[in-house]
Length: 134
Picture (spheres, one colour):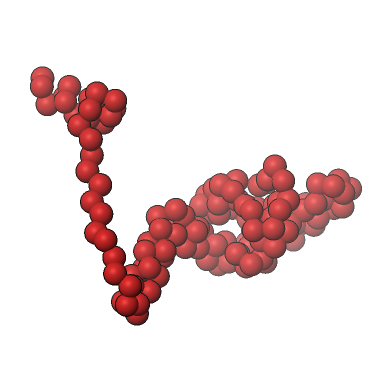
């Protein structure tokens, strides 16, 4: 079961992503338009506002062994979590779109380089300094 804390369009969390990553067929409460992101048959939506109906849907899902019939779609959803909806993929997509826009644009860009500050407040710097000074 993957149960979100709220049911808001376009809002889903690691609760659903983790279920797909584990190879499960999630019984899902949350994002009403989740089918925009994942194949409808890769999960079974339930509505916690109607407990009797939710129980009936869960029993039907188990009786029909929806996991077995949706393995390929679960794998597809897992791949989407890994390749499209994780933070690194979203950042890469944003950068690629920005580069494309820059190539098509006549606006000028300023190159910015961010250097790591070697200070006592930087925990990684402190760790590296302590390891190397041994």
